[in-house]
Image (cartoon, rainbow, N blue to C red; front, side, top):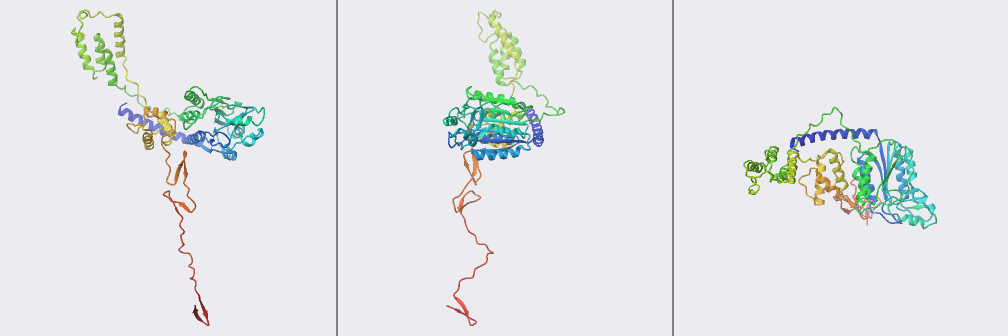
Amino acid sequence: MNALHYFRCLVVGTAVAVLCVCFTAIQAQAEKRVALVIGNSSYVSTTPLDNPKNDAADIAAALERLGFEVVLGLDLGFDGMRQARKRFNNLLKSADVAMFFYAGHALQVDGVNYLAPVDTLLQEKNDLEFETVSLDLILRQMERNTETNLVFLDACRDNPLIKQFESVGRSTGAGTGLAQPNISQGGPFIAFATSPGDIALDGTGRNSPFTTSLLRHIERPSVELNTMMIDVRAGVYKATGRQQRPWTNSGLLGRFFFNKVAALPESEPQEEPAATPPISASRQKEIWGLIKDTKEPKILLDFIKKFPDGETTKLAAIRLEQLLLGGGDTQPDPGTAAKPDTQTPAAKQSEREIALIVENAEPEKPQVMTREVIRTIQTELNRVGCNAGAADGQWGPKGRKSLASFSENSGLKYASTEPTFDLLDDLKTQTGRVCPLVCGVRYRVSGDKCVRKTCASGLVLTSKGSCVKKTTTVSKTAPKTAPKSNCFKFNGRLVCE
């Protein structure tokens, strides 16, 4: 791609990005989106899980970038889940789109799915109503208020709660995985991390396989929900060695896009088609290596016409001159020099194939750095914790800073801080956070969050993040107390002891 073509692409790409930003702003005003996102990892009475908190936090961040108002809950007990659902319900009353994402333990009993708070303790069958939250309850809560409802459950993990529950009584009806809900027309869209009744993997990286694939695709522009889930399903299936296949079921009556981008108006001037780029010098050398021993002058002549200014053109001209003067090879075989047409049919076929190679030689098709590719790079940088900002397809100072941080922390070196396909390939190989979490001086790193520093009793936190002794200041306006004295008045005179 020459400099002029690159400049044109940059101008057109910037114009399209501006249009997309304007459309997103209009869409945000026209459609209110809300989400409840819960990730439970630190279970008290059963096996803790590594990833659900990370899964929920990363999904919440992606949804906020997509214009959702998010209620996020991490490691919630039963009361915490009730309060989160209450806040979610208040948002639902004026929403057009509602989404529920849950990662953590869950179980099915008699065909009903129950989500497990971190303080779940099952001692008898009736405890289900008081220790867990029915998925049906959340679905009814959503369907009462909004027409477009989306549910994503990354909660089909190998669950010790089932064994715990089965131990409290006979014929409990508990089963592995989650039960398939009945979805009527006009009902919600539901996605499970794996097929109903099967067990999903928790994963060894920062996120589960299901959430990793979902994060990779959820911010792609102009991709319809069902199409997106096909790609998510394929990603999980491949990443788990064909062990896990996500399941979806939908009662939606329309198409849904997480990141819908407006098309350019028809009157928008289109970019002029670029001139055919020249065939690279390396490709010319490769073709020359195939034809340098040919005995067909026409092949050499076609090569010279095709590449008049190539590095190997002079060699082709010398070879052509040798053939035309009857010299043949530089060291001709005396037995075949007088009989130039003694080639075997196989040799002639080979010459024809070489001739076609020269005739049909085309430049390598360059990969075009489109806005969608840049968005994908920004999304991947955010996924590995390098803070590229909003995935808007515009590459600026924040993107360059993010790339530099990724390069420094991953040990991968790049020629510049501009987005490339090599960078995208490297990002996709990363399974967890690469860039360290950076907190302000008054905060400290706790897991994957910045939390405010605390000081011991009697100490206060300064603006520089240090704990110092609390000092008591005396107000300048405070009344001064009279000094103590042993003097008194007697008969109008002051007498002191």
